Structure formats: C-alpha cells, structure tokens
Length: 367
Figure 1: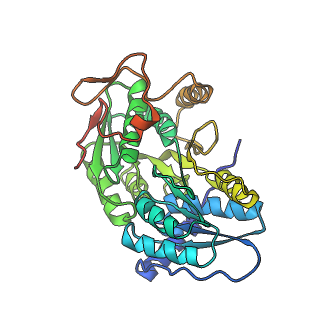
Figure 2: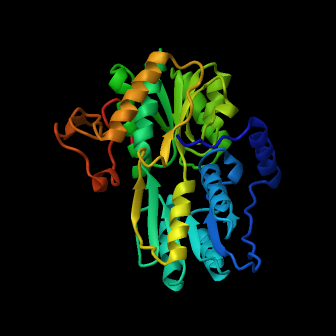
Figure 3: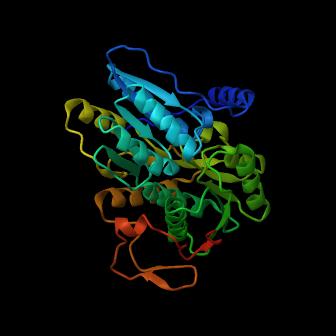
C-alpha cells in the first residue's frame, strides 16, 4: 500500500499566512542554474500551500526529485489560465527545461501553442484531452474514488441532503459529481446531492461561503471539487461532516473530514521523466486508475462506522478487479430518462464529454 502524503496543520496554516501576506502575487519563473541535470518544470494554477490540487502535484514533484536525484525542477505558482499561462510556459521552455508539466485544464490550448514552437521539449498537460508529437496528457480516474467517498457520505448523512461545492461546469467536475452521487445512492437511495457552483479553483473565502450556504440549507455532509480547505472548515464550524479532495484534508478539519478522494502523482512523474531521458517517450492520453494507485481514498476519520468501511472496501476491491464499473447502466438523468441502458458502459470518450447530471443531483449545469 502506498503511503499518501499528508501535510501538518501547522504547515498549512503557515502557508496560508504566507499566501495572505503576498496578496496572491504570482511568482516569476527563475532561470535554473546550469547543473548538468535534466530540467523539469511545473506550472500550477494555485499556490503549493493550497492544501489541495497544487499541493498534491507538488508532492509528486518532490517524490520525483527524491527518486531521481539527477533531475532539477522549477515551479511557477498561481498562474491564471489563458494568455498569462502561455507566456509562463514559453518562458520555461526557453530556459532549457526538457519536460514541462502544465497542471490545470485551462492550460491545454496554451500548452499546445507553445509546444509547436519548441519541438524538442516534451509537454505533459493534466486533465485535458489534446496531444501533439511532443505533447501528452494525463489524469486520474477520480470518479472511482468519488464513488467510494459517496458511499461514506451516503451512510453518514442524517438529513439526506449532501452539499457539493462545485468548481466550473466542465466534464471533469460534472463526472465527479455524478460518480459521487451514484456512490451516495448505492447505499442511500433517498439522499440527494445539492450542487452550488462557485466558478473558482482557488478562492478560500468564496468556497467556504458556498459550503455555509449549503449547510444552512439543510446539508449535513459537504463535498467539493476546489483546491482549498474552506468547505471542510465550514463543515467543522457548523458541527457537520465533509469529504475532502486532492489530498488528505483531515489535518485542517479533523472533526469533520470523513475521508478524502486523493491523487498520488509521484510515480507517474517518475515514469514520464524516465521515458524522456531514455528516449522512449511517446505522447499518450493516460488516465490512471485506482488499480494504478494514482488515485484513492485517504484514511477514514474516527467517526466513520466499521460497517461503512466494510462497504467501501468491498466496492474498492470490485472496482480494482473490474467487477464494478461506476458508469454502468441503467443510469437515469435528472428527468428520469435512461441515458445508459442496462448492460452498457460509458466509454472514455463519453465520460470525457459529460454534460448532464444523473438522477439524485439537485442542481443545474451553468452554460
């Protein structure tokens, strides 16, 4: 079993203070010193101290450095999606970095654009779907862990209202909400998942307030897709429960967090860098699974009952063994229409284009 990285409460608090003191100012990419090492760069949409998405990727970077001492890394934090990211990616490519990992969905087109200008640099984009001769993409089948965390939430709720603080209405987020809801309703068909959009990836105050709104509206368990621990803290302050995301968020809200759906990027980063160094790299669309241990669940909180843990472990084993595929029919949408017939499974292409909610979701998809 792999050891999931944890961050201490004190470390995250210190990082949060640092972020606040910096006023959200973006860091500039500094040119790596000439060391003879393979230069690898990472572009993050948030600060590494977010306790979520960027933190998880940075733990993967540190794992890479530990396993491959002949690698030198550069990071650029808090890079907005869009034109600004293209400028940063270009700068990193021009500085001699041989591999550049761009770790947010909105970096996809900028990554492709820069790759055309630097054919001898390898680019890897996280959560997108485009490839090129020197560009691959990668992600984790987080919907598997979402389903399992939904089982935990479905067993824990007393009000049968579970709040979901959602980021942006893109297929990745919609897919996660649907998988989570299906997990919830597999053990509690009376429960509903109420969705509230923030249109943010990293906005601690806004995301916390969204969770408060859901909690005040009757939710007694909160899930989320954003990169901050704001929703978890809101749940703890209200005496309710929560499901974390990206990393184990229990240190920031130990009385609230039931478990977290987490990423473990390190081994994949080692694999990619090693392939580039050996000259065997080929652009691919990699979607790592629970079987690959790219994604999984963080340890359960003490409030999670043993029978719930047993249900989760049974479902996890079935997912890994291929006996349980999350998006297998029959699956109905919110209107009750059967979208996936009995005996059918959604293809990867269909899951990557998810634009509808399953039965049990209370919310709409903003256009």
